[in-house]
Length: 298
Image 1 (cartoon, helix red, strand yellow):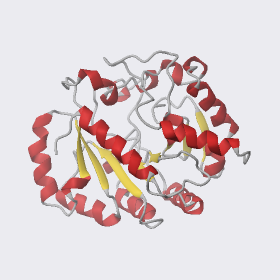
Image 2 (spheres, helix red, strand yellow):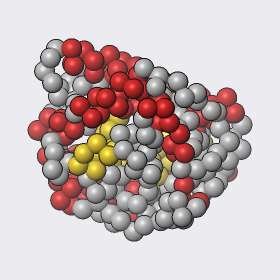
Image 3 (cartoon, one colour):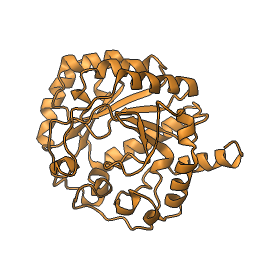
Image 4 (cartoon, helix red, strand yellow):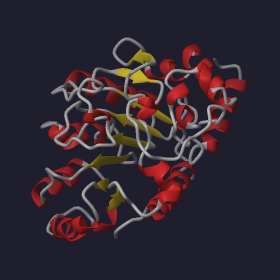
């Protein structure tokens, strides 16, 4: 069950293939594999590789997504018949939102076909709470190991006592000093320049697929250009005022994508200060997106 960076990368690639092979069309959201929703700005940890390590850069804030925004996103997903993946992740610890189980339920009620997953540090997880999440409709859980591999046994005990299937829980090595230096870019990055880390540096001319396969919706409904834009340098729109499909295929996001797909990171904020290797996933999403645009429907 304990993952390494390489096996986790393999799992993610396999999941991407499964989502594409599901014959579930993205319709008006071409190429989109994952809608990531940041349901809270609060975190109970302060990690050295996280922007929160410097409160002047990224203060810890007790801000939660509202039921109104949750309902709006869910209704948009239903309207657009989007049935790929929703990830409750982003910039905070999802389990600190007291409404988390009901938020999961709101999206499960949209479709049984949706993959609903979360990334968590696991500090607040108990067997009973895992039961609540499973019954609400969560079907994938990534448990980040921030302290070290010794966390494995304790996690296994919690999961085994719950209803959450053990094969639906992935342990993700996330501690400083992981012995897989060749893949440290998968584990640690500079959050688009918001924090300094010792990781692989990606050149300013490096292409990136992120804005073609992932959308991040912030706690206040803002849609960011990228899930790595911790400092909110580039807001594309807001789900309350603009339909989700209009945001996804907007001219503003299109121009942003053209720059990044052409390797012109310097022309984009926050890409100009980002060290993420954006070509690990999503190459087919680039093709899906441009195929949609070529039809002249925009």
